[in-house]
Image (cartoon, rainbow, N blue to C red; front, side, top):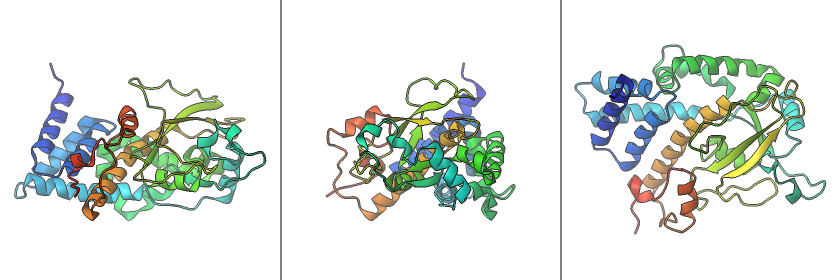
Length: 310
């Protein structure tokens, strides 16, 4: 027998699937539901948005929600300055190398230096935005997607980023193009690669395995590692290390998990924009597309998103 939560999620999915929307819009709304921290919480919110506008069509209500959803996730792509003290601690923790190269030091020339950039996993001042004030429409969407408890936790974590050591939990050192792809939602850094959740990270852990995964074929994006080698889309396994977790905390896994959830939406909106501008002939039908299907990513063929090619 289905639970009440399962029923409400199924109802919301049926509402989305039966609406006369583009394939990309369907995928965006479906991902809002299945990537949510609690899909039933997100489903109730989406159904409420449809029901509270009886004079509007289902499609109009869903598209109005989609506009707000786009405005919200775009705020997570903002670039923010990082205190010099936090940057110094970060470079000390990550040995002044892009964290994605931690397993590949042998491929780095002796004494070579490559450009790297610090980046926030989640922009710390996101809740300073007036559109995310208490009881605002966009905050309501975020609470539906992450749950109110996770949003409260996130707010507290970001407030603590003013202290350099705490800020390390929200910082990564990346090559410029990896940083841009990560910030714009084209790449995620995750431990969740298998069918089961990964083992919880010990508080005193000095090394954690992660995977860098591009959310689109490399023909669509140009990502270069800090040693100049192209990133083939992954999964690229690497370790994030620290000499002393009490002095140089590792990145917070929950912040990376939140980033991955938001990255899915950011990337889908970029797909929608690309289709509207007229993508060139699809490279997704090449054999390399199997890599991305195997990694569980989102793009087997742009035609599924409403793209047409001459």
